[in-house]
Length: 339
Image (tube, rainbow, N blue to C red; front, top):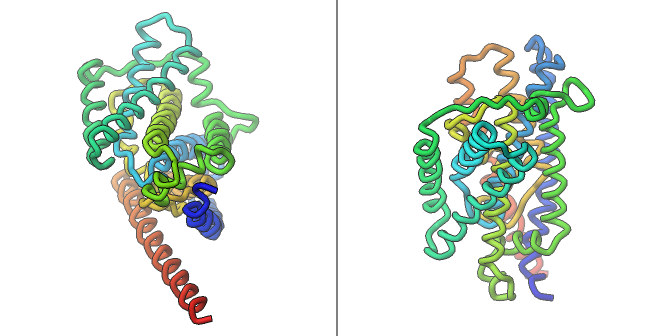
């Protein structure tokens, strides 16, 4: 069948990622043990609720980046899309009579449209995604500042505030985490149980082979950008409900955060693989470190240092694992040829 030959590397990448997921689970468990012993209040319901809020948003932002990493691209405009959606929510809530459910639907549509616009520019100019998304990051951020005059909009909707700061079943669990888990399940179904998802993985594994086998690469790339924009919109809604305001500075710290989960999970920058569970656990691991350092009263600048260090370690470990896998594959091929 068409596409089967270039799906084999994809399936190998998915299987080989399972070991990394279990490694992240082990590291996360060790992190929780350390911070629970040395950080008073780490396991308190209040801190766990705050931690679940942080994890939820980190997971969705990581998924937004992974949606393009799967295709062998990167989205430097995740924060730009986020601030466009946040500003739109702030304007609609404070200056229009639009009901909240419709505001949220429109916010999702705006995020998807913002992603689609980036895709159109990339596809028609044939420029690298790095260049295009970097340009749109400035375009979106600058447009919001011009439109809002850097104004902050207070969000007073009880429903939205309860969504961002309430609890789900247990005091330690935020409703945001439930949403993140639902998003994770839907993305897993999309990538591993639907034709568009398999095609996305195939395009990332080998774009030329995918095109030669008859896949509509441009349409798949457009879909990837739309999915990324939609996920940015979900993360923007989460941040708005959590902070009870629409701020023009939203998304300024999303860029590094968007790479941490996918890189910890072993999602290759070259494309062709994705680990939904790995991104989820990787975000839990990073969020646990961040929360634990706050509990230990570590200065803010050390938190930024920790974020960059985790990202760098993820890059180095990922590269070493890929080189090890390539050496193992070549060794097997030589042994098979001799046999």
